[in-house]
Length: 400
Image (cartoon, rainbow, N blue to C red; front, side, top):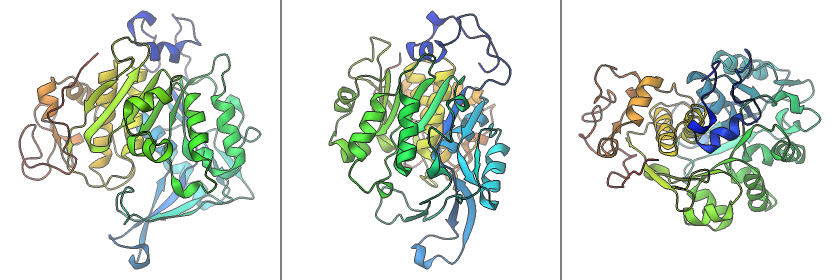
């Protein structure tokens, strides 16, 4: 939809009506306008050369990491106009971040440069964040991004976008950052549709305020993403229905169930306004779990911008996550839009047997059944061994 007239508002879900509510129904977005602004800290990350404890790893490879910039890069790769708003030091690491993120096609013109504070960096292991073996060491205290505030990040830098994407990570960086997130999520005329990924990182919260702060911010958003494990850890809510009840204000709430799938409510439709719609994740041969949550949010928001129904939005989220799961780094090129659309449109039975392995986004487009060139059996739907991401084959997928 980027750069083109929007469809009639009665032809798209209510969440998309909210995206476009600030513009006349027959408007054409001006050249240079952005679809999504993603605001938050991006850091230089050092990836281990081999598995093991940080104390035992002999060398590291430089990359970039940041939930919000990951989403911006994935959306740009999917053909949307994405903008990253952040703050980096006036140093070589800051130069590297701006160059790399801009090289992914993301607008970086609103990134601030701080002459007194450094760009944040961190080191991590390869293990899944959900396991005790995972280690991450942040060097972000006093970083340039931690000085983001309503004074250093003007509202004009995010105004005009159709969607503003934020995460709970930014709220944890400093009191000034929390004040900024609260200002951006406050109701105001013409506010972009606010997408909020709870993204609870326990290491960043030290005062016990996380449950109340993150719940309050989520309730001010329009679209909320939260993992079932996060909801249990933060709020003691072990059931998606309880999460929906605790977040009555957002129009769309997505509860991610790990490798099993995701369940969401869309309060703009009667069909899925209470118990929600469950869509299982495809089986995936996981290479690395890092970045999958950001990719899911990007896939879901991409489908939202295109006016797709709730079931299709969830499936596009799963497909984007599968692209990230089957590569070693945080960022992965999403599947081509026509391929993703074709897979998302599969019947329930075919979707239930979908099996995605490394290289699946580069698979031969002429073979509708082929999904990758991974290990034996992982290249085609419905055959091969169970991958680590197998889940939900027998679940019924209800589509809007």
